[in-house]
Length: 112
Image (tube, rainbow, N blue to C red):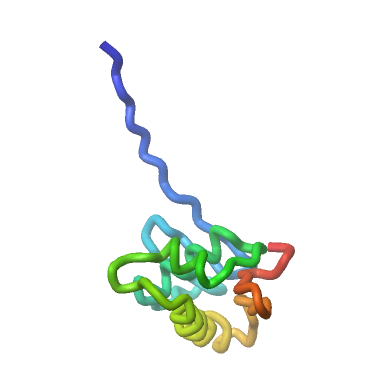
């Protein structure tokens, strides 16, 4: 009989400039300072971080973050992106999440 070995795979932390998004403990930090995010904000940020440098549509974000409370109108993503910008960018005078008009959002620019 065969033996199944289950390996624990720790999710990889994403680094975009001085922003670190760590899905294991569900933490985000900027310039070494931890940023307090809601679970939904973290889910949106983590999806953007996994796709850093690539434009993702609101619909893609909704499909990835979807649960019973997060369905329907993709424009809800705008609300969460605004919250993230307030927490990630304003205190540091940066623009980490770029709006690509008519297409969606990109984290970290095209060279991330």
